[in-house]
Image (tube, rainbow, N blue to C red; front, side):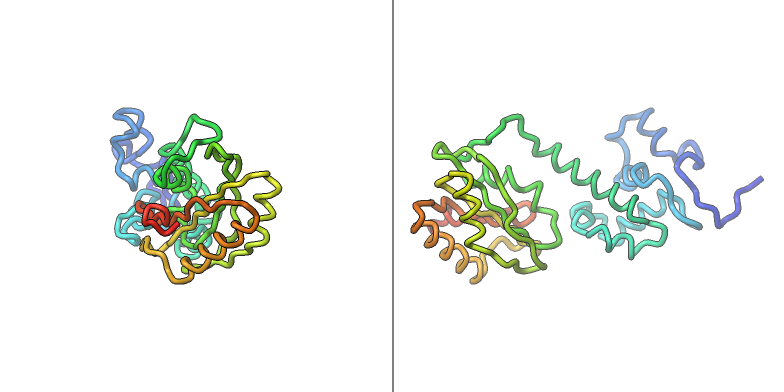
Length: 234
C-alpha cells in the first residue's frame, strides 16, 4: 500500500538508489553531493517533503553555499524551515563545526605564534563562520607560546563592546606579558574600522603601563584576515 502524501519520508524509506547512506557505503562518503550529506545529518524531512528535498531547498536558499549556511544561527534555521526543530538544527551546526575543527586540527599543545598567519590558523575555526562579532585575547609566554585564550566579548553584526580592565585582569592572572587580540568581521570585509583602530590604540596604551606588550591585532574575515603588525601599525 502506498504511503499517504502527508507522511514524512525518512532516508531509510527512500528508493534504494536515492538513499545517501547506501550510496556512501557503496561508493564512499566523498562521492555524495552536499545535499545528500546534509540529508544524512538531518535524518528525516517533514510532511510532504523528503529529507533530500529539504536539504536541497536549504542549500538553494543560501545560493548552494555551505559557507553561507554555516553562518546561519540555529534559531533562524528552526524558524525558517517547518519541521526543522532545534535538535536537527543543532546537529547540522555541530557537523559543520566538526568539519572546521578537522580542517584546522593541530597536534601541538601550547602553539607557537611566529606570524599573523599562525594566529589566523589558530582562530579561524572559531570565528570565520560566525554571524556576529566576537573579541578574543591570546595570552602568550615570553617564548610566544599560547598559554591560554579567552573570549572577552561577543556582540552584533558590526561591533562588540570591549572591557579593557577585564582584559588585563585576566592577562595578569595568567602571569603573561604578551598578548594578541583577535576579532572577526562577519561582513567578510577584513579592513579595520575607525572603532577597530581606536580599541587597538587603547589596548596598546593600557598594556604599556603594565609592561604588557600588544604584539598584534588580527581581524578574521571569512577566508582572509588583516594584521595590524603586518601593516606596520603595531
